[in-house]
Image (cartoon, rainbow, N blue to C red):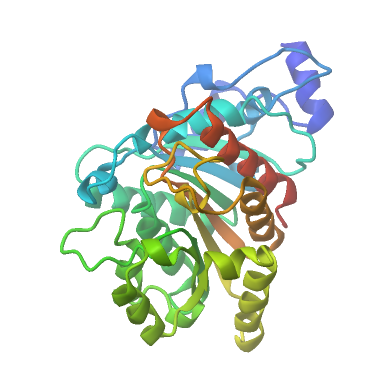
Length: 338
């Protein structure tokens, strides 16, 4: 135990938490299921510490970044997609906790998974409440899906915490996800947010959509509302620069500081770099471009939620997709502004 404490104190000055400390940590989010201990990778080498040895010792109240999972793919099933995303939080964590803390100065806590029993609507209610509590406590949330339907729950948490007029949302995705379906699913989250007026259209960005995968009717719907639309070609021509410029315009013209949400659907990345996707495509962002966008999100001090969805471990190759998202999480934690 003394050796483990010295590793953590060397990196973060973190003391090992007692069982009572951990109970206090979970008391505000008591319905969450804790992470399986075997996912926290250990080398037990003072010269080579891993995140799996450090993060379990950090209490919720001490963290500035909080990881929460939503392991379900009911929305994907409803959208007639290929299921498997329910396993994503586990496999992403498995890869993330093998990484070292090099470059990370902020304290990170992993508070486990939201209860995914019952209907999709009930799951969304639980996730909204949990994420709203995290960001209301002044922390940044990393949310691991699951299907992209969780963008509705996370966006609703933003509106609940900051007000519908005071946050900016970015959907990095090959699709618009504004389907006009009677039953909510992985293709409807942003239409729900827009129709329920939980986000202002001028503060919403559809970034990385691919015309061959996007409905022209939904394009007109978004364009008529005044949503910011950047195709894959427009987004990748200067990677984060075009998005940065368009977002800066909104910040400048808004009298208050806008809080920001970034949803990263892994199908925005080409299938060579991310084969484990609910909807893979040979076209898409390259891995480096994807990571640059995550670093851009991290660089904004007002980014409150970053979300990763649609990873499907059933179809992954050599854990390539889970590893990419794990790297993205590391980049976010290493570059996040306080």
